[in-house]
Image 1 (cartoon, rainbow, N blue to C red):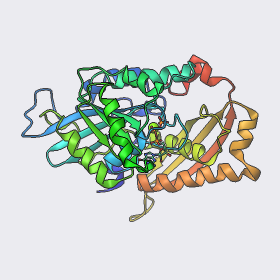
Image 2: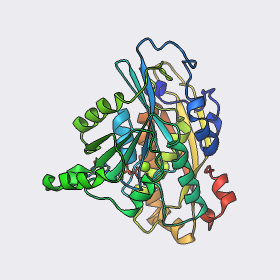
Image 3: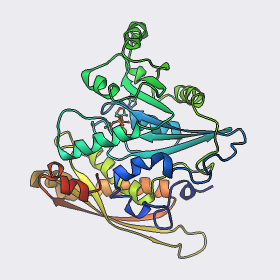
Length: 347
Ligand SMILES: Nc1nc2c(ncn2[C@@H]2O[C@H](COP(=O)(O)OP(=O)(O)OP(=O)(O)O)[C@@H](O)[C@H]2O)c(=O)[nH]1
Ligand SMILES: [Mg+2]
């Protein structure tokens, strides 16, 4: 099966909202999460022993939620970086194994430092995502529980089973220190299970899949067996540009830079045996002229590299040939301006 089958193809997709993927209405999406996700099954459909359910991944910024989602799905569908606040949109990833279909929802890191319009919209996305799911993975860094973690935990409903995912265990060199810390965590919430692990360890990820399965209800699958994400190639393209931007610029570039896709066109293969072609044009929006210079780099080196790395990865993910053009624009104060935040795709 080709990679294109697994990723919603924005040019061909007939799904509601696919056209708006880069500027999604997060509220409507989150509200409709359970109502809109079932595609193959009708409510009350005979499950034939199938299990299926929704698992939300939540936590403060930078604890490894998107890394975990990608590991659980087995393919990169959510971008990651060492900078906090990488994830801005809900991303859904599926993993079907045996009779069970696990549907994971990655969320932006819940943010309490700045109350700007962008952060308010990101926090709303987290609150919406935890409202109506079968299981919550509350992710923290093993051995640490800060006020920022506590504020996320306070959002979680007591009646939804919640696992404590103590991630980045590989960073803890004295494993003996973890037991007393886990004990203190017992008093924080009625966690269904404690899972010390590393999202970078395949063995740990399989163990977590086994644990998650037990919490899912018997019901018919919502997606086809080989579907991996509900996000379109167009959305992935904009996210990949943002990931390369974050990874290739230093800490000086504030997290508020964003990416808008101006063109996403698909051309069929010219000849048999060739791949289809995706023509992409994207604008990187920054807040200051100095940021613009930073993104462009010396003699345009950096922006070239952002484009090249995006192209290589998108070609692999979409199984297509890709042409990409990048532009940079300055729009000062967009992250504080509600209307602008909306116009860039955040609700
Ligand atoms: N050592 C180690 N690093 C990890 C692990 N999981 C994630 N990371 C790193 O932690 C950083 C943040 O990972 P992300 O997956 O982007 O974190 P996130 O929680 O999605 O972050 P936001 O989207 O910004 O909230 C990246 O540099 C990852 O490589 C892990 O198990 N061990
Ligand atoms: Mg993330």
